Amino acid sequence: MSPRHFILVSLLLGLVSADFSTSFKNFIIANYGQEMYDNLARNDLGSVGSYGGGSHDGNSATSKRAVILVHGTTNNAGTFSFQRNTLLNNGWSDETVYGTTYGSGSAEITPAPDVAMECEFVQQVRNMITVVANFTKQKVDVIGYSLGSPIARKAILGGECADNSTVNLGSPLTSSVETYVSVAGANRASYLCVLPVTNACSTTNGLFCLSSFLTNINAQQGYEGSHIYSIYGPSDDKVGFYNLPCLTRNSRIVGATEYANATGNHDAILSGTINLQMTYLNAN
Ligand SMILES: *[C@@H]1O[C@H](CO)[C@@H](O)[C@H](O)[C@H]1NC(C)=O
Ligand SMILES: *[C@@H]1O[C@H](CO)[C@@H](O)[C@H](O)[C@H]1NC(C)=O
Ligand SMILES: *[C@@H]1O[C@H](CO)[C@@H](O)[C@H](O)[C@H]1NC(C)=O
Image 1 (cartoon, rainbow, N blue to C red):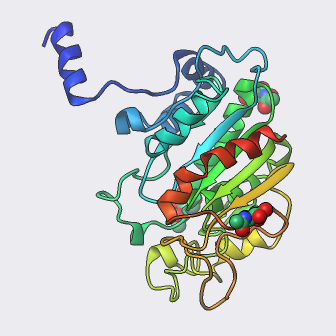
Image 2: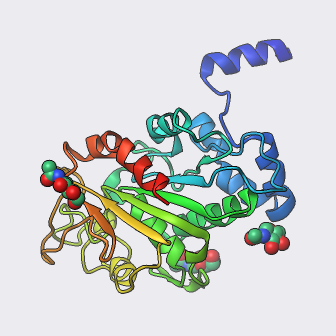
């Protein structure tokens, strides 16, 4: 195939990758190695795998603090393109909006009941926070959507992985995070996990309210960043408002500033509160 034909076929198949910018890619490879780059860029998923970097060179601080979007179960960085684009239209830029994809990135490959909060996912989000803070030379903001919220909180907290005691993630990244925003986060459970019968509801690293993972991230307070917010609503149909058997509010982060009356179902809350998400980021 000639180069020209290859480009044409790639365009037709949608294989042209958004990926990280060239400068961000070079920075990661130079400072952390090729494996870290491959792991965060997720080029295996094509354009939905990752984004961020812009024309920043990594030698000085970005003019604005970066925000890292952490996706939820069975989706990927590209799923949050509405939120990303809204940020890009409201003062953020490609230098300051970042995303990576943990897991398979697809419900066809891994259905939701099979997705637990694996150590590897937490490690990846933690690496993303460290690398972006290093590249932008300042603290970052983090938005954790749905399952992405407990995963991001554990990434910031560090310590031993719930599902693999041989891995200690290290000390908290609190000093690297200015603002943490949970949106429809499964912080204390999902109401669908009444019994721990699937991987997603596992007692080890699932969304059953008494799992080791959730017990660990809720045993301490205030570690997610300098300012902590949780946005959720009563009509959430995936995380839900309350759970059995603990009768706690699924999205509550004790000590966080709460907005608990977001309207609409789970997906509507993720996108419909983008203005509030930006208000919280801009408040600090
Ligand atoms: C950035 O990464 C480099 C290479 O690993 C390291 O030497 C440096 O201390 C890091 N800087 C920050 C601010 O994390
Ligand atoms: C635990 O993590 C180590 C180091 O990454 C890995 O070699 C091992 O396979 C993991 N064990 C399990 C049970 O996942
Ligand atoms: C929604 O919640 C916020 C904060 O929790 C509160 O300030 C606001 O008054 C509430 N709005 C309604 C309509 O209940």
